[in-house]
Image 1 (spheres, rainbow, N blue to C red):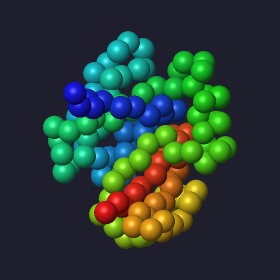
Image 2: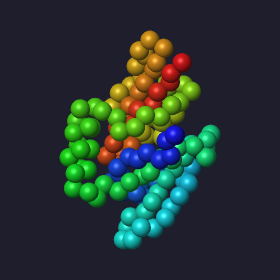
Image 3: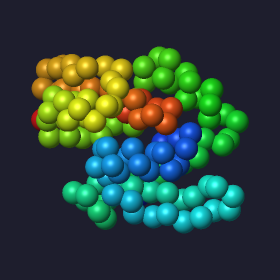
Image 4: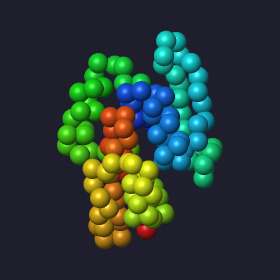
Length: 129
């Protein structure tokens, strides 16, 4: 068994697609209309185009806004992405105007930082051994 797709709830799929591709560097994999404005919209890592897909899922269900608000209030990331160098990625993203809820922190061999994805989520970037 392997993970095929995981999701983050986003307030605006078009805005999320722009952020996750143009800023974070993911590549659009699927964009299938589902009726209305909703789409099955996934992105993947350019380093692993056949790997796990991230679904940019609409936040339309009534349970989603309070869930997302609680996570952000408590500083809990909705997802975690691996990077080779957290500090370098932090500087690159800050240069693109990305806001961080947590600057890089070293915890033994692990370094993390937490960014705001502009779509209602906190996202962690991490470097592990």
